[in-house]
Amino acid sequence: MQPGYDTAEEGRRGLRHFAPGTYDLAALDMIRDLGGLTRAAAERGAELVVWPEAALWVNPRVDSRVRPALRRLATQTDAAIVVPFFLPERAQGATVLATPGGALSPTQPKQRPMWFLGEDGGNRREPTPVRAPGGLLGTLLGVDDQDPASGRRLAGSGATVLATSTHDWEQLAVHHRAHARLHALATGAPLVRADWRYGSAIYDRDGRQVASAPGAKRRVVVSAQAETTPAADEEGEPRAKPGHGFAFPSKRPLNAHSSSLPRKQELHGRGARSVGEASRRRSNSRTNMSESEGISGQEDRITNGESDLS
Image 1 (cartoon, rainbow, N blue to C red):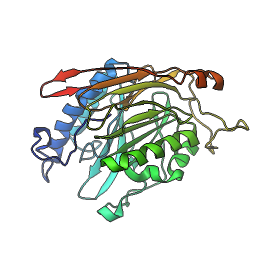
Image 2 (cartoon, rainbow, N blue to C red):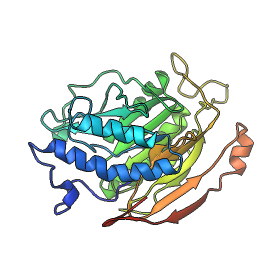
Image 3 (spheres, one colour):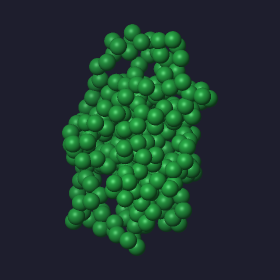
């Protein structure tokens, strides 16, 4: 998902409550805005929707106003939603998964807090994937993807799908996209990358970029298909060599959006001002995968009030 704006922007009505004492109201505004993108992704069949980093500034598991709003969105869209949140009073980040049944998963903390910006890592623990459409989901936040061990630990714990959420400036986007590609290639797990403004994309289990946002600061939903069965190395072993094996392997196509994972096992990515969608099926044959690298895509515009939603 790529909403196309930044939460630090001034003068944007939807961000008016991002202030101490009203972070719960800001979260409700954000659920309404990103909810439009989530619904657009769900209409394309999304099963999993990935939001960008620090989308909410409250813990949705415990906030009495935010929790039911988020559960309602997941239920209405019949999609699982990866919701990254940030607690400013603790300077800690984490993710939670809202399931189509209305449940909220245990949190997955950020593994590499940016201490130079004052972030605190007191909530860190061993990364544990959570059950999601298509298998087990592991999440990365911000600079987590700069450490090759982050994705490997998640895959070693059974993750079959990875999601990385960032809040980048433009110059970092190219680096994070490269890191995302390497994580997918090293672990054999498809990866969905969602950023607020730059570089939202989807990678298949061989590290190939199968869909990406058409440009910077575009409000877009990008979709693609990728299988969740872990790929093997030349010796036939899973690339990440997980200690407990990959749970719930699936040979069904994983439809991806850069902010969501569709009903057909898709991953959805959100972006701004235009909607991009690309879908691609791949067979278990490595030859067939090579021959079908081309991606057919299309863009269309969906207008909702003041801004275009994808």
